Length: 295
Image (cartoon, rainbow, N blue to C red; front, top):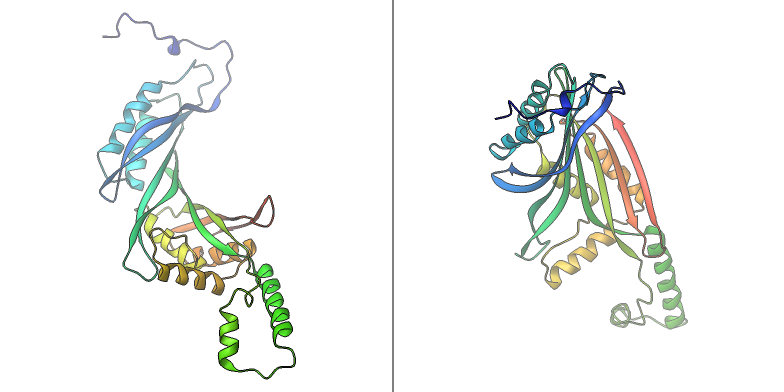
């Protein structure tokens, strides 16, 4: 079919410079994750190491992505796909890469009530093959709530001052104090909270045979203690308020909690964690970053 069609990409270039990466971005691809079809976008490319070559064969990369729709997503499947990238570019390329971006939908239970709801998590997989060496990285974004320890202390001080003003020189009765604590004039100040985000950049161990999305998400959310909720009743909202009150944290605290949680995971060989608190007091974000690599 192509015997009489010119292929300009096969002609030599007038500027003989090798290129680190050539490919396509934003390719729509379906993935199979946990038996479910997930819509994703792919960035697929190879290095152009032959400095004399005009270009690569992008259609070959596109067609090689078809296998992703046919089998469960795994490190082995990505190795196969990247291997096909390189086989189709023999003498041109020595390195292949693939990035996949998608949203993982997980059904999460409420804290107390029997309600359940869906929550989405932004995910990325970055895979690179050079020779026989496969490098895999997993990026996850997790929303959570954070209550400022400083504002909590300041709020407690104001409540103490109001208590002193309302009960100065008086004999106290337990029922009267209890009623005061439940009144608007008693709790005169509350600490500020904000929706926050944990951005995890994880390097998977070479021996990893699967992508442990659920396990890593559960582990990180448990470490933080204040994952945002889906469907709730008032009992769940009260439990959420309790969880925030018992897990006061600066962004530095959140980053350290995530660090300690992730170093325990055998399938992780290195990471960068970024805790981003969208300040409700300020018009800017508070951010803390921690990095670690297995020795």
